Image 1 (cartoon, rainbow, N blue to C red):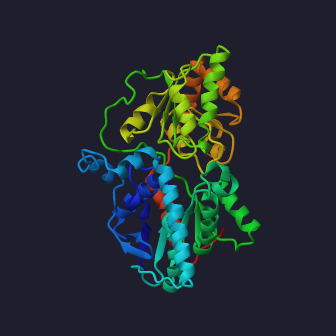
Image 2 (image 1 turned 120 degrees about the vertical axis):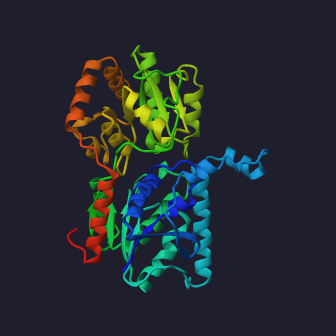
Image 3 (image 1 turned 30 degrees about the horizontal axis):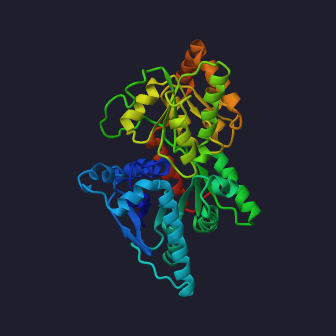
Length: 420
């Protein structure tokens, strides 16, 4: 009986990995050390192949050498259309094409795979992309596989307006198949587990065993970098926000908070936002970059590597994370691991991450965020007291510990499961 780990996300991803790809990478690199785990990827429709562990930065680091002197029409199109939007559209296209092909063949898809009888399979990536589960779900019963699958969140089903048109429908199809395929759901927070139980209850699905595991938040060890990505901003003069610029992350409340502070005479630091520009966020990114009232105070960085991000965490005054809803909220944990206070929204899993060591504001209120940020900025004694408490009470979680939790859940699954 073999243990398999899916790295389809790392094989197919281009550019700097985002949250899910980082989870796959951090877990995968640890499983690669144990000599007991084999890796596979969904390489083409219906084809699953054993592959070596792949470093997600390799494609990015090698891309400059192969870049043509004159951009092609396809390259120009890629420059115009944001990467996350391209991937979502491509995913929808692949889904519709696969669905049409499957219907035409009366769902007699034949899949190729390397698995043996009763093997244990860990699914940890964004398997709603490239119609992964539509094919994998046909393999599982034939091979008698035991499947432990990570569930990050069910946000597209509750908040479809946070995503591009058509994605919520695709995600619901994936979610039903995901719950049907998994023998055990590995949830990244208690909040995600509760959402999963609600989904099962509302849709009258069987209750699957669930395990909550904690994502790591240790300092990353990415490629070398210059120490300061924003040369004009001094250490301690800015607050930091980390995450893809997309509508769910609620950057609009930060933009309005800085405008509110300006209109009411509140003192505010610089704001440094680290994240690629995602779907439904072009307008707010444009406004922050071009509004003469704040464009010298708000800075959006889209190409920050791990060493630079570590510098930004360790030299900020504090961090802000005004997201509407999260499956976990890794930037909050990373902030605390760096000894920095985070101002976050008191919704979903975020209080689960920050507890009493974070400050909270209303994600619907620019005034609340403005006053909370300004109060912390102008009261360094309060910040120092909170940082002392964070250093004394917060226990960072290593990715080694995270991988041990995942292995324990998978090993328990292979010997017959257990309590929910």
